[in-house]
Amino acid sequence: MSGANENIRGAMIMVATMAAFTFNDAIFKTVAGQVPLFQSIFIRGAIVTVGLFVVLLFLGQLRPEISRRDWKLIIARTLGDIGATITFLFALFNAPLADVTAILQSAPLVITLAGAFFLREKVGWRRFSAIGVGLFGVLLIVRPGGDGFNPYLLAAVVTLGFILLRDLPTRRLSPSVPSMFVAFFTASAITVTSGLATLATEWQPVSKSSLLTIGFAASFIFAAYTLSVMVMRTGEMGFVQPFRFTAILWAILLGFFVFDEYPDTLSLIGTAIVISMGIYTFARERRRAK
Image (cartoon, rainbow, N blue to C red; front, side):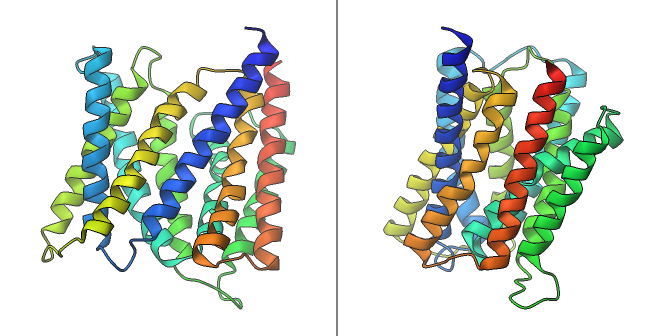
């Protein structure tokens, strides 16, 4: 398959990946108020973990050879993913879907900035400027202390910090470490952590409809995990990665039709800034790679 066709295929997979993640978020959000947060995380995590176990069993990757260095990195990224899952879902349950999604789309900017400071990756003044403008866009969405301020959006900002803890170690993992095994290990850890957290309070009864809803959400997150592995191995990353921002389009549509939510003018401006600066940063990285 030619490079151009591979890029198109990679872009389509990225769009599907973002759709799967966002549909999972929207479906999962519908159980807010019906099922306690940690119970819902535990139920979804158990379903996803079983699904990933079956896939790994089929692939023969349940016991891969992993060095001590890589295990340390896997544990570090897992801790980040646990924190990111809890803070993100806390924000999702209490704030508009589109706003929470838009804030998280600034993650590539934050990761580029952290890579410059912690991994000593070369970042020029143009990308530094783009990062600064992009973070200003996040401020327009959150608007701390301003009119329309939703304090729960701060949890989404905290999620960015946990994403750093997750993604920086991921970038240092050896190529030989199976991505699906890492996803399985992470899903298992999140399930165990949320299960322990449910012990602090009385377990609430879960209706059949809520259980089916969580299972439906789990099917999308499972698809998203699988597609996210495929997209990392298809096409040029500089071409494919900007299509991750289609998540915001899905979030706006789902927020409007499912939750009757629509971002206000400042949120839309901030979202547009985050998207444009993210695309610019990916374009600069692609140019430097060439």
